[in-house]
Image (cartoon, helix red, strand yellow):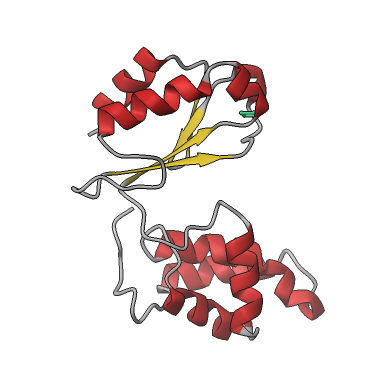
Length: 167
Ligand code: FES
């Protein structure tokens, strides 16, 4: 998730603009604002894995919406990052099914291994550790997500091995 552009002056690349056009085609032209969530997702990917205030402003201009409307959506959903995250964004589900299957032990193992607390990023910028609500993989609890990938049926030992083999 390296920043591809200067986040103080974000602009969609030609490839991102083409993707945005594809996204807009999914919605009636008179409801263009309905595309806000996928456009925010596109912006987050494009702008280094997070949405700086400048990115929010850019998306607002791009969508022809007031910045506050974009911020309201971006700040409501945990899938949008309003702070810079590490190369590996580790999201540990601690909701009920995962909690009943010892997700707290998973969190503790990660905190020990990475030497950070939940909500922090390692000093080298490689790992950000957060807790999230249900990610919809309860049947294979406990689980976590690293960037786009789910890892399920975890144990503290498995999770340390998982972290250690990341390039
Ligand atoms: S409670 Fe963890 S995936 Fe649903």
